Amino acid sequence: RRDGDPRAAYDVVTHPLNKEAVAVLPDLQEVQRAAKTVRLHEELCVLYVALTRAVHHLELAIDFPGEDLAKSSFAGIILQGMGVREVKPSSWVGEDGGEPILGRSKISAEPGRRAAASDSAARERRIELLAGVAPIGYVTPSRAARAAAGSEPRPTSELFKLADPARRRGVLWHAWFEGIAWSEDALPCVAQLIDRAREAGLGKIEPREAHELLGALAAPEIRSQLSRAEAAARLGAQPGEIRLLREGRFAYLRDAQGGSELVQGAFDRAVISDAQKRAEIIDFKTDAIASGDESALRERAEKYRPQMELYRSALARLAGLDESRIDMRVCFVVAGRSVELA
View 1 (cartoon, helix red, strand yellow):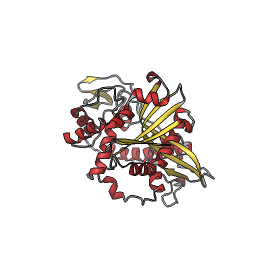
View 2 (tube, one colour; view 1 turned 180 degrees about the horizontal axis):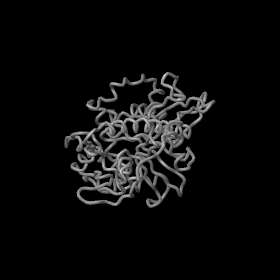
View 3 (cartoon, rainbow, N blue to C red; view 1 turned 90 degrees about the vertical axis):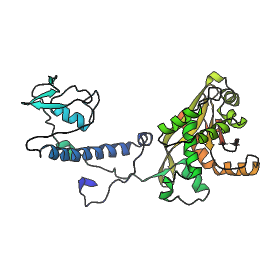
View 4 (spheres, helix red, strand yellow; view 1 turned 90 degrees about the horizontal axis):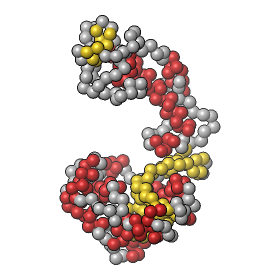
């Protein structure tokens, strides 16, 4: 809000964005820096009140701030305010007659050093919205595909229904595919897949679920999409000339009606040949669809065209390629089939 007045109208409204999105929005970077300054000032005021209310004794448990105390963490601020320049995890720090001590041993400190930074600069910094800045739209590849298909927006409650078998399998298999480079390499075993799912925070995984993925990887068309040799042949390159991108996150601005639009997302897999100035994008889908129904496969793949075209546009920007030199392929892993979008 302008001038920090809680009764004033909002100058800027945004939701949290990842670093890729923020990197292409310099105005938003300044807004976030200003907002962070105001928030830190308010939190430091609360911390000051908490620290100064003790009458006889105060004990404060803080996170280990790391090796660099100069970083702006509250733990680092407190330790530097006590004159501490070095501390180890699981240790305690105190003051004895104004001099910092660690455990029973004296530690190095700058005598007399105390935090005395003025907060006037923090009070002066407020969120400002540059005059004449038009609102920025927001689109993701999956949202573009739903809009093109005329699908209704999903209720918020559905976003958390990982217990749904189809949704759960989609999230799980995408996490597993992210860890697979080339089919010529040794594929992960069941135990490794279960460990990887646990590390990704997907909870308990049954061995049966891992066996389902390994069975899908045995399908010739799926192995072809994961093959280094066959990918190189498709791009007219040598196997050693190609590079692989997995879960490539991106964000860029594009012109839209009435202003600009932020496009943000991540493509599953891309193979690039810089020598041939060509690339291919592969998107893995876990749709339940019959492997022998060519018409249904083609129709389902076409529904994903808007999504794939946004991926292609993002990869063209990332790799410096012409979009016409990038092939798009939808890989239906449950059916063991892939469909190329011309």
